[in-house]
Amino acid sequence: MSTPRTLLKSLTLMGTLAGALALGGCAHHPNNAQIGTGVGAVAGGVVGNALFGSTLGTVGGAAAGALIGNQVGSDSDNAGRRGRRR
Image 1 (tube, rainbow, N blue to C red):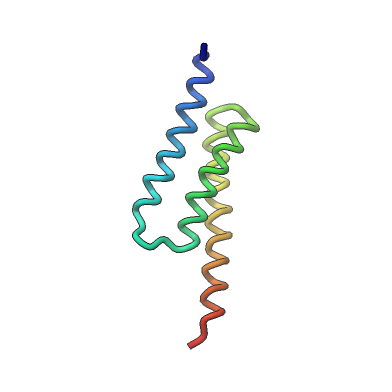
Image 2 (cartoon, rainbow, N blue to C red):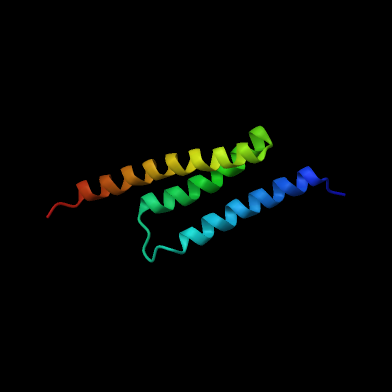
């Protein structure tokens, strides 16, 4: 039997995942920064929920993961551009 708190955690996690997947569909050919943002948001939300066990922890983890994922992907995009000289 699930408690209201467990149900809220599950709904928050599913909502975060669904939102990340929905936003991922906005880009036809996403670059590494966009992919990193989506993956980082989902991973950060999962980690934030596991560590803090609250909605605030999930949302904060998702935000931090999105920022980190965006920067890692952006660095990867920039490295790819530097490698291609014309």
